[in-house]
Image (cartoon, rainbow over all chains, first blue to last red):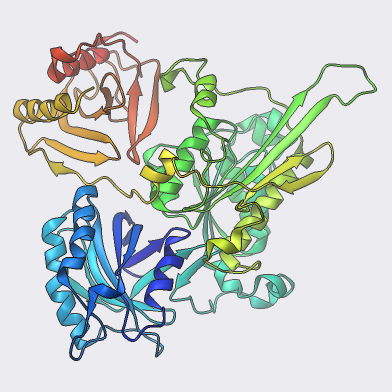
Amino acid sequence: MSDAQLRFPLGLGHQLREIVFGQAAHEMVAFCLVTHVQVGAETVLLVRRVFGLSEDDYVDGPGHGAAWRGASMLPIIDIAMREGLGIVLVHAHDFGERARLSADDLASARRLVPMFQARVPGRPHGSIVLGRGTASGLLALPGCLPVVTNDLGVRWLGAAIVDWPTGVGDPTVDQEAFDRQALVMGDQGLLARARIVVVGLCGGGSHVVHQLAHTGVGTIIGIDDDMCDGTNLHRAIGMRPQDGRRRTPKTQVMSRLVRNIGTGAKFIGIQARVPDRQTIDALMSADVIVGCVDNLHARADLMEIAWRNCVSYVDVGVNIRALKGVASEPRASIGGNVHVFIPGGFCSWCCGFITNDKLRGERGGRDDRSYFQNKRGQAQVVSFNAVVAGQAVSEVLQLVSAYRGSSIDPAALLIGDGQQRGALKFDGMRGTLQEWGATRRPECPTCNEVLAAGSLVWKAAA
Amino acid sequence: MTLAFISESVRAVAETYGPEQVRVAVDGARTMLRIGEVELYPASRPPSTPMLLVLDPGQAKPIAHVQPGQLLANGKAPKSTSIVLVGGESWLQFSFNIPWVEEHGIMRFIAAARQRFAQDE
């Protein structure tokens, strides 16, 4: 893992690469406006906006790949100051294996970066160069002097998660054990390095953990504050009758399940409820979050954490309703969903899956969340859970291993009518899982305000 | 609430608690005001807590939060509370009917919020 990572939501990475890798008579530069978040020892720079310069802004400069009028940066700096965002200048060296700032680049960066720092001191700033699969540059983290880093990670979010530099094969992985899977998934090291957080470990989540362990995902973090009881046995994979009697924590059942599968997957259980502090830390560290929760309040929290930190989030749910009617007619409606939320694409608010009215409904019409009452006694059947959970795992595999492709161009995710793929509806009566798609709403507050918002920057009250 | 009220609140809280105790952050349209230590009812456990005030121009009144785990003087967890996500952080939300008139100012609001933890449940 690098000390710092630059993370691009869907669309912005493509926009940046179109600019800096574009064909021109000189190097092209772009300005990324960023927030940041600390994930363990790594500082993650979250890109909120990307700006290029017009051709008129460039000037001829001796001995330099690109030179531009200083005044052309002023509107960008103005936005950064107004919105409290860091500024990262990006250009590309589309040659050689490892990109490095040239002497001219470095001299320019040493002038610009402190100037950016002086204007927005609470956020990171830098000047970086992208190569073919690598990045390096001069980076100034909040409160620190600028330092040259040759070990800068870049994460591009698109149809899959594309990391620069791409990891090398993991020698500890038993490749032979995954031979058949590797025919589709490719390098098992991608899965072995992945960190997937599963929230909710009963009807849906236990299937997800079970399958992730079989696929050889490196780290599975399971979050659930609940203990088993006898009524879970018909649907909780890995549970034994004595777990119900002993009130075994569901995290312990999953730990045992993963260990017994024996593919080397590591399971970390967190017996707590989102958004307890330790769950937020775990969710921020995820490559992908899988939400298997049964209420919209928890989903809204997961959505916010995923968007704020630019983490892809797969949500699953099954909704079975008993119908009253004559015996010869169906006695239930069985629906469900698998949503794949890729930061920068549509969110659960955009597609109407979460609305304020629905949240208020869970609170019995009150405005205060402390009135929230979890639903009890909803119908659950293991086979229906298995369908949506299995699809969720397939979506995780796509995000991690890119078996369907790794384009970061939003167009690659379109399925017609301008709809982005990733909203699947399950019909348990027909036995179908159908792609409906959804679109990002331009006026969505979650996408406009929360996406890549990062950590709050606390300042002294002036 | 008005923007004038928000900036006056920041000033008043910093003046009362001291600038070293008070931090401000912006999250979208909201201003977050964090007080490092607010004294509660003396027997509350613990007797003081960090407090977060959310000042949202789209809302009529401020929202107060304290650090999760705050107990009442009798050692019980206060009823009708929940842990909520605010600005990506974990805070305790509590239900308490605080009469609200903007002209009364933020300090009176904080005083009323502190009283929540002097209750028996």
